[in-house]
Length: 378
Length: 67
Ligand code: FES
Ligand SMILES: [Fe+2]
Image (tube, rainbow over all chains, first blue to last red; front, side, top):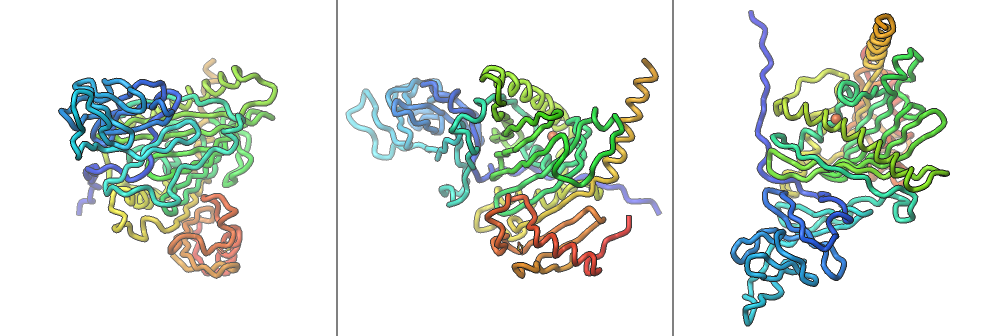
């Protein structure tokens, strides 16, 4: 009898876009008085700041003759289309047609519900057209408004030929932190509840592990890196990070978020604020934050390289040291179905802690052997 | 999975362990029945529930495969 070979089920990426808040970028970049075009949610959006200081988001294609509003100009609170200068307000209504006696009664385009939080702009996407439910929001960073943190360092990268589920999978993927991100996870736990998904991570570095010092396993506290990362909805990850270098602990908040462009491409945005280090001026603090973000950015590029070359897989074959991939995807599914079709399995609380004993033991041995080989060859 | 009742709030969850250090906890519904919830981070396991699970393991009500 021949042994059955496992077959990959690639499935198909969903046609619709996730219900939830999506960050489009920083207010400081989008609020410069110019209209900005953003390809997202299978169409194009226009973002601008009106004279009233508010950021507004509409579908970019003018409902008159299809002009691209992001190529137009800001006129007072409105955006003017470059084609025939129809003026659109942030509420989606055509406010004025300079050459016409009156505006047709049904001149209304799609206005996106916006939220500004700690210097970032969000839009609410819901294929059913409902407003955000009570309690579904983006948390504030405590102390951000009081200047305890550096200003944002921020970057973005386009990921084409992948659905954004790939980046969500990272939430439960303990082992890839070793192979892709040069980390060594020693504690790893996931919790799903409602529209929220958390990953607790503690770990050390390859360098520290290679010294052969004993590694404390299964403890959230006391490692070189500690991270508490939560997705608030389908696309916005707030990662509270503590990195220790001897006596110095750097505390930062790393944002990893995305908005879908099509069902097979998305924009990956990432940014960071760092708790200002006492005794250092703002410029030095900003420089450290910039350096940390650059390193994290390199890590994302490693992820992107994997995504570009991997296949979509709906039936991953897992071992015990892998995190709860199926439960994660069940949780993620809630954002792609109508609210009425969300099942208890998608939103009930589920907690999963990985046993890292075998992994840490193997990885440390591997790193020590590499170190020894390096030492004997030099 | 085996049921475990929290000794503090009486909520019943289902628990399984693949090893001494691995734990899965399936709740039925949200965790609002936990009186500590408001003071805990979303990802924190309630310490009373953790104790109840530990007791269940000690009493052999949850099977822990030998490693
Ligand atoms: S006290 Fe029972 S679950 Fe928290
Ligand atoms: Fe990753």
